[in-house]
Length: 289
Ligand SMILES: Cc1cc2nc3c(=O)[nH]c(=O)nc-3n(C[C@H](O)[C@H](O)[C@H](O)COP(=O)(O)OP(=O)(O)OC[C@H]3O[C@@H](n4cnc5c(N)ncnc54)[C@H](O)[C@@H]3O)c2cc1C
Image (cartoon, rainbow, N blue to C red; front, side, top):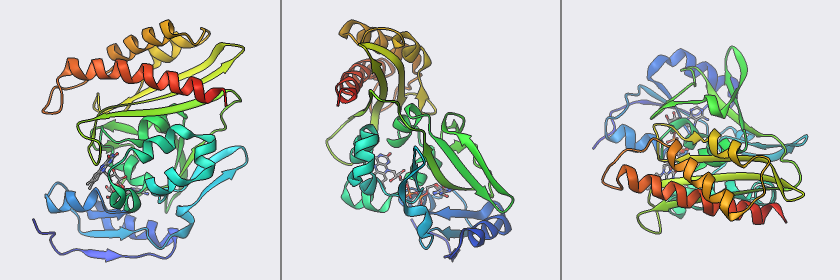
């Protein structure tokens, strides 16, 4: 398993990175943490003529408040997400997703942007970010555009990112008061395993009524899925065990899992049901803080 010879660029500005990407054509690939792209190159899963590292672009490594929104740079590692006091306070479900990923070494090398752009169905960060109604900033030499994360994933390893575009920011709108978030993952062993299923929930509760509910599932369809039926069912209802159980059933019906070595289709549906109930309970507890 050798990587064939290729060019490696380390641009010092975003404009330079965009220019290299567009002049390099389809063989030019962005290199962030390398934890997905290096194994892909070794296994000949992708063809690359050049790698464009983002490592020198410090502006893409920040987590900060921008107005009322939370801004996450694409080079923020899962380890940094997990340790960030700001993320833990505003969006604990995302910290939980980041903490659930891989082992220490990979959590420190990998990036949030890479986790989204790889578009692997079992990735841990997309479900939480979907429940946050996150927006992506995509930049090329031609300018910048914004895209809702729900429109970004097109299929396994396929996204709406154009060849000449770089993901340069993830914007999370402010959550209303009384909002709680949570993520849970079922995996075959305790560490460094991909999700058999992952579930994220976001609940906003006021006067014991659910004002807004979003549930998203990973690893149980060709893309991470926002499950509208479960969210719509909960909206306007009381946050009771009975209603959470029904939302769990709707989540299990809404996914499209495959059967593989890690679990059958029915097994994955059962796991989705259980995980959905668990994350709803935890999001409810979190909403009362
Ligand atoms: C041992 C191991 C365990 C793992 N465990 C987990 C796990 O538990 N959960 C999980 O979700 N993942 C896991 N992964 C997968 C991987 O670590 C993550 O998907 C990681 O977040 C990818 O980020 P990266 O920066 O390394 O991406 P890279 O490998 O650098 O890039 C991945 C892809 O995204 C593109 N890309 C990256 N950044 C950008 C950008 N800003 N703009 C445009 N394109 C971009 C690259 O061109 C490439 O196609 C694991 C990987 C390994 C090796």
